[in-house]
Image 1: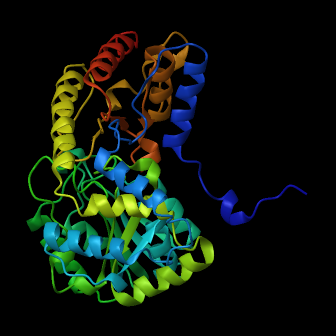
Image 2 (image 1 turned 60 degrees about the vertical axis):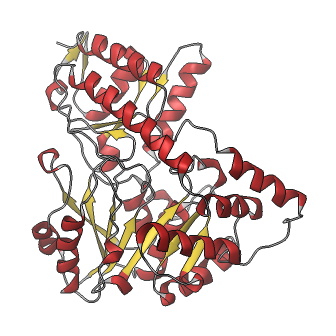
Length: 397
């Protein structure tokens, strides 16, 4: 009998991956699609990182590594946290996993009991609510607004907390909005968390290095809640290493010990060669990362100017990451021939089929009146996407 478990049946397919697959199917038919659906830097991994991987192969790093990661990688991560964030961690507080998503999954499985509540501001990254579901927790979604740059307020957070609240999960810089929390905003959130000693803060900082407003601020900097903050980070975005699959969690020792215990049964340690490459990345001076950030900022400015020039899109200017998350309410209810654009899903499919531009519906991120466009691609493709979208929306009546 073909019957998957209820926990898998309850999961939603990742819409970002699904839309990218649809764009590839059109491309296979010879249709030129501008793919703005995936959050992946279009830069190659820097040469010095690739050289570290080659050395690791030549030096025969081909045996099982420690579950939590090689000692030199754990020390490099601790060094990065101290140097860049002024945060003191020891290697036994860090667990290296197969990407930041894996790190996040580990932590949720280790701290969330059945029916525990996890407060999640919306828009949220697509996998948050699904991973909470896998951990048998309940997502408490707190809507935010474009007028507030899609940031949760302390008042909203306080109102969402109940005796069942176990964790607060958020992302800064944000996927999908590009919003960045300031130190003052994080401090205000920390003051709320102070009053609720059972709550764990899970801070997804994978876009740390793609920040257009200055120094990255981590909520782990506040001593009053420091022991209850789990940092999730990795090398995918800041070092153009999405395929290397290296992420990490940095947390209190009891959480790190639990995450290592879980990982020891699920995957054991992660790829040895990728670990050595990541060690070089974390020990670097950050020059290549800053160069990529400058390119993303230029692309942001180009893309914001282009999309804001199209009537009907309501946007805010993202301060980090590489996404634009416009409100597309203006287009809902309009027609193209006999087709009605009733939802953001419909609008995303309309752009794919008629503009040959792949975007992701905001419904995937808990925001049914938005779409997400990634500008992690070339200036030429971004300009082409703007032109195609502008022409396509003119056909809606």
